[in-house]
Length: 89
Image (cartoon, rainbow, N blue to C red; front, side, top):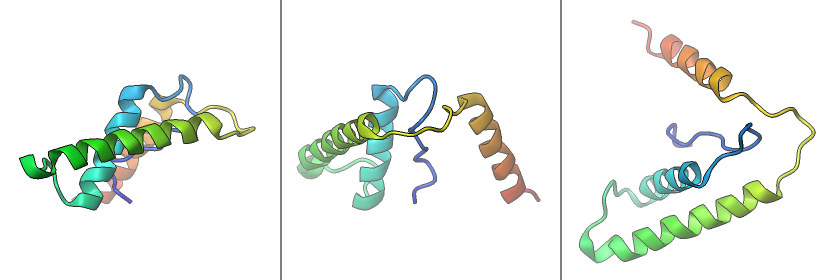
């Protein structure tokens, strides 16, 4: 899994369109191997990002849970703590 892609489900407030698009972009970059595609591949790349974002948005809208929504600040603190432990010298 790409470490830059974050969980977007079950947050309060819910993930917005820009977060979903950023995750879609990271996913397409990862599987294509392109950080920025060539001009010849730009249309296919951009279309893939749009499609992944659309499907991801639909998925997030359809998922259900009984768990309480997660707090973004608490989850960010957990990620920072894991990163500190992982990269501690």
